[in-house]
Length: 270
Image (cartoon, rainbow, N blue to C red):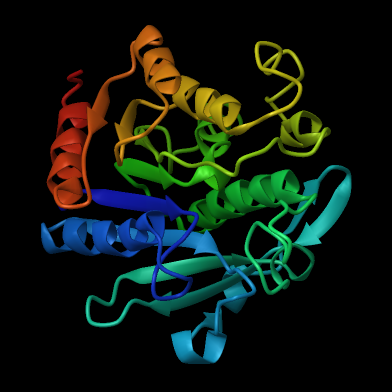
């Protein structure tokens, strides 16, 4: 049977404006699928997405769950579409409060939205609950973008005994640029859920910036990929200190690097 690869992306073209993470969000799943793997992709349903043009439609059987973030209930809506030509299936995590605004993570003045941390937590938990509902068991999970930073933590704690994730290898993809500032003051509290307690997070700063999010993702991942030059050397040194295997790639060779890395992790190699 072909290996199953789950991609959790912050951005994917053609649904959002073109950036390196967004190009990889499309190109990497497509190339991995071409190599014979079974793939599925998740991303937020940003308000900039044209649902009609992208041919998104709601999946009623997967929607309807309420996710509690920061003591408030938020309905989870799941939509789906297929990438042109390759037909790679893309699932969209939606919620009117978090993802209806016409910008992604920054407002019209270039300032980060005050609830970006809550949005990241909702996205992470929405993805994992949906994969569990699908009963789809990935062999590898590739997380791309700072909004996915809490995914490895939840998989290794809250979902540690969940059959869908128990054998999956987690790869975190790092880029040169984060979001440029700290998340909201109560972000650390927002992360707390079931097996994730204040004690779990005591080693991390109270205010999370991009390097601190990277540290969190690294601690609970099996491998790290630096997807472009300029990724913080301090962050990469931290990964090395945690004995996490690190691979570097460029946009020209990322598909081959990821495919080889997935196979290496599956064999237990560093």
